Image 1 (cartoon, rainbow, N blue to C red):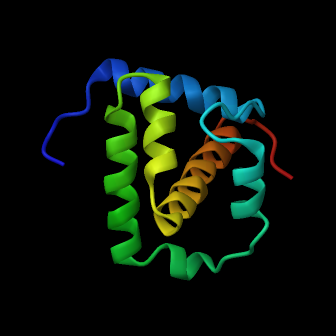
Image 2: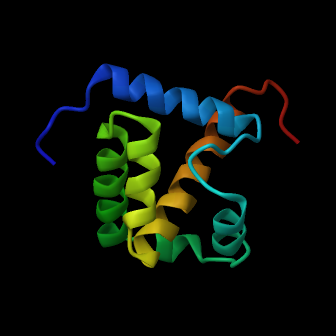
Length: 106
């Protein structure tokens, strides 16, 4: 992915992440989320180099999509493994953002 991610696309993605932090998951339908997140995965497997590179490429492509419709269409076009990795990466980002913005930890 040699294209530079445009600032407006990053701002759009940040807005989507902010909504997700509040429990409003605009990019994903509830059934797809439940299907992916119900299965426990080993984080060590998730964070291997090849998978991280693939997630980075897919997330970069997602961010570059100019409209919400384009983002959703792109997600729906992904093969199952790529979609699952994006969902998990997305929610890792959401969770990290929520934790970073809270003063108290349990």
